[in-house]
Amino acid sequence: MNEHDSEKVAGVLLRRGYRQVASPDEARLVFYNTCSIREKAAQKVFSRLGEFNPRNNFGRESGKVIGVLGCVAQQEGEEIFERAPWVSLVCGSASYRELPLLLARLEAGENRVTGLDTDTDETFETELTRRDHPFRAYLTIIEGCDKACSYCVVPYTRGPERSRASESILREVRELADVGYTELQLLGQTVNSYRDPSNRHLSFSELLLGVAEVPGIRRVRFMTSHPHDMGKDIVDAIDASPALCDHIHLPVQSGSTRVLRAMQRTYAREEYLEKIGMIRGARKPISITTDFIVGFPGESEVEFEETLSLLDAAQFDGAFSFQYSPRPHTPAALMADPVPEREKQRRLQALQERQRAIQLQRHQSLMGQTFEALVDGASRREGQWTGRTSSNRVLNFTSSRTDLLGKYVRVRVTGAGPNSLTGEESIE
Ligand code: 5AD
Ligand code: SF4
Image 1: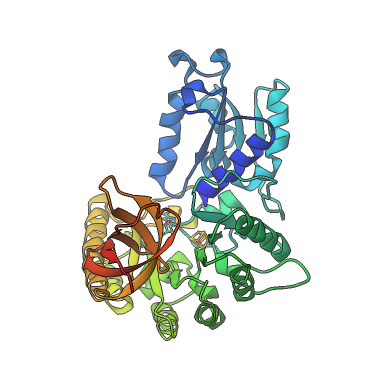
Image 2: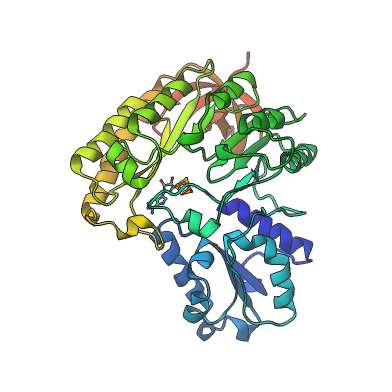
């Protein structure tokens, strides 16, 4: 989501006549897009900004204008001017639609401009988006978040949930197809909570089907889904449309109902597993990936073991896992009974080891099968390519053909590791 925000901000700049340069050294204007989801990401910002300290011959004295965007900007606000006085712009992720205006003020010579409102019901739409990925186009369909997970800073930094009108989304999809994109990824913090604000009132699954029908579009992905809004209609849509990718990212966070309640995730362990059962009941095998947080305040050893047993029960195809990190403005930051750092580390490692074994086993079961890969990279070794299956698995393969970048190739799986598959082009 953040990367796509950068693509949109770059589009705004290009529209105003700015030009991309190769390095920050050459730039007159430098924007940092920032993330505050965990403490480490937020800390990085200030060390990076330090590199522009005028004492190092940077900053306003050198004619450079420095700006901070994103969730750290939203969270820290004018504090950033205090800690890094050489910064001229602070604009939070909920205020990007103000950017052209803020830029105009900077260009007119103002030294400190801010965009920090979150009370908006509008989305950030741009006339131009600079797309950095050659084969996959991202597009935001819903911004902000109305859930209230007790550990999460996103509702605070990105503001309330707002969906984009379906006509506007479909118009952008047609434009992307016209310029040659065949794969799209629809984005939102809770993408499946989408509610069409226009009088067409499309549901999320209807929107998916509408996007999949646009001529030229061969693959449609979406991320991230919240279990609470994961209805059967979405699975039915995936079953019905070959262009809807067989992959759902469905963060669970914990396998313990007690911890899930404390996290305010709005579902219990069993309810989550029922959703998994529903997805596994589809005609198409659908790959399921997830997110975990270990070491939430008060998480006991027994509760952590429930997370491990959920891994076995759910059989995820991939998982991102994180140590709990207290965030400002969140209820969990005030909770007692923190899990010690070393214990968080141990739990993270145990979880990752168990999941690795599961992934290896699941990948091994795919040996001999043939999948279609969209080729997105070439290895330095001749005849070696890399691509992604519809289920979003990395597939490294050999082919005697050249010029495969951006093409769809049928590949037979001949090898399996925990994080990727290997294979050879199948000539049938
Ligand atoms: N600490 C650790 N991980 C977090 N995430 C969100 N907030 C926190 C936090 N305070 C993780 C969740 C979410 C993913 C994007 O980041 O697992 O799904
Ligand atoms: Fe954060 Fe929960 Fe919203 Fe996801 S659903 S962005 S974890 S508050």
